Length: 405
Picture 1 (spheres, rainbow, N blue to C red):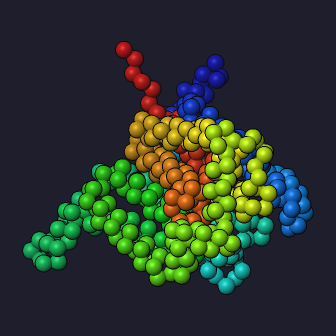
Picture 2 (picture 1 turned 90 degrees about the vertical axis):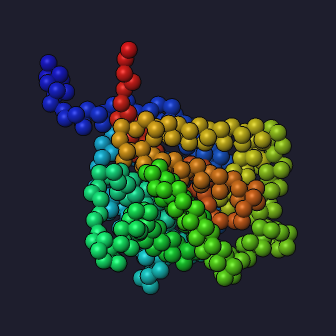
Picture 3 (picture 1 turned 180 degrees about the horizontal axis):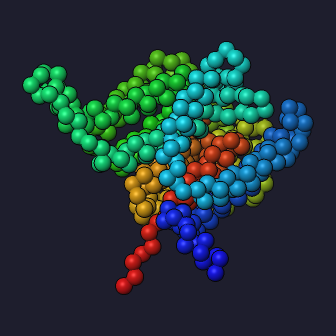
């Protein structure tokens, strides 16, 4: 009787937030996380075994990654239990925090940490993280929160008796004024990330933001104009930056510098090609024995191809495809526009990140330094990815039940 009374005292919002989570999406997430841990361990133990900086400990990377995975699954569950409407309030704080963290990368206070010719990390005590990971979440939450109210906002009125009023009225009519705050946010974040430089992270954030704008109903011609502008800007950065110009050269011909710039790409292609149909067997990769640099990071899928072969790699990609399809299914069936836009942004980000990583290890595109979700070594990245999956599961809890009859 007491339990029934407590249930009746719950608000409608609380009851909706306690609905069942989407089990197919949860199972796909856990499967990819589990397979990712196995493959990251296989890819990393040789590197760790010969690395004095980690004490020649072959379990160094997997021990840390597994700890973050357990914590990430716990965070996933806790986030999935939160009524996702709270993320509206948090969106501004997360975005502001992301911009501050991006600025910390360049401060002379010792927070910035440079790796492999790029300064992308922030180090605060024992904690290392890439602010770009937080920026992705901040952009998605903020854009979804603002654009979900797009149809309910009052129309702006301008004095058409004045030239300025007529111009503003025209710009408002074609949707330009509406895009200014979103363009400004993306511009600031893109500039900060390109200064690191972090081309792949910039592309991910721009695509995630654009996907939410598209799902919110922004007129299509703005994407054509914006895409052309971004392409021109990226082309300028690539041609005018020695760092990026060199990467383009290596992409076009890795054998032009086979011992330095093209070494990782060449070894990755050897790993992918030597796997064949069925692979060499789990744990039996040859390229991870100090041939392929840092195989536990961006090039972990090369080891997947070598050890599991075409069939194993195809199964992993099918699991990613099913996760992405299910994510969009949740977005289509979400209870409200805010939930739908959040899920679209997160799912698109994961989809593009997977595509870019596979494209890099097969040399379809230049090396961008982009990780494979759930597979690449990186504790904070895995933690944030699982938290994002928790957001999607939170939205899935409030999907309206199908009507009977």
